[in-house]
Image 1 (cartoon, rainbow, N blue to C red):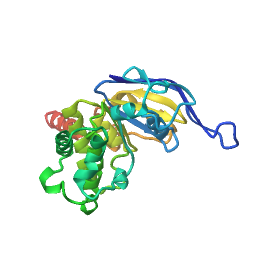
Image 2: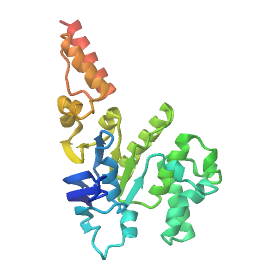
Image 3: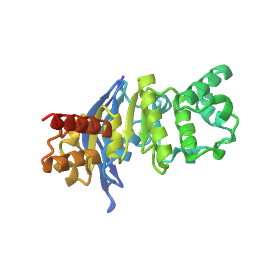
Image 4: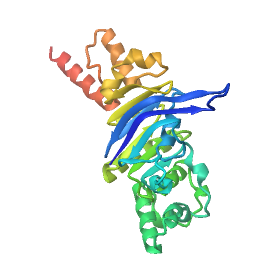
Length: 287
């Protein structure tokens, strides 16, 4: 299972004074089970790209293959594609509308024509995946829940469709630190448990560094960089030139080196920094 993008271009308002090239001849592949981070400055084309993955937008030119199926082909039903590609927009809780948590999560599976028993199973499983207690919350109104819980209800509604690919657009936007940490932890655990393919769009270099296997960096509709977090975050000058940066802890390690504290420079997380600093302190105390 994979997502393959070939020479994808998307132009808004073509042949008009407002013509804008949002995606400019991009190509890449996302393989089964990968956790990919998609980063870029506002206007880089990230949101336009992910809306192509389940057919919400159609290419001006180029092709998109989901599990080797060209989704633009006339015989392809977009409904089938959208079962495979679950897209969670920013503030997905704004799309909650049912009177109970159960009914909201069950809406998608019900539209698949599943039996009542299968729907119950899917709702329970998806709530378990995002750590929402089924018996405690299933009959509650989603609008009585905290912001983080509502966000998890919305994600559970997508998971209940059992998509092969889960695309999350800024899933922590607007949440307080506790809610934000909870959502990120659930996304991480979800990927480990289900082994599905996850694409995470985020402005947080720290979140991307902690979670993903590979990063795709977009700038002005093109893929600017692609590689592992360590490979991408080594390109400090390139990232800063396009309005991005590197994790704050990585900046700190660079500053320490400038002050003759010789530490590894490819540190991406606080946990890694802690280990490296302790190692340096022990080494120097024995000197």
